[in-house]
Image (cartoon, rainbow, N blue to C red; front, side):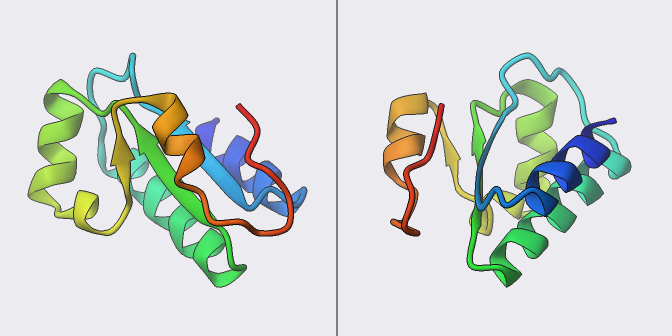
Length: 93
């Protein structure tokens, strides 16, 4: 479901996505694949994917896989939104 929704957003023209992981308690290989695929797709179109508040087991998995070295992560939503590059239109909360 998440993968389909993110694909629809990107296909619809979204180029700045902030994925809120606040209430996510665990992530499997499918979830990681969705994040990486979305990141690569957006980067290829001049866009960006960022993560908001990964914690617990999710943070551990992202750290072990070294994804946080590639996909930026933030604790504060306002800081994350302000970090998006200017692409001709503002990031929306």
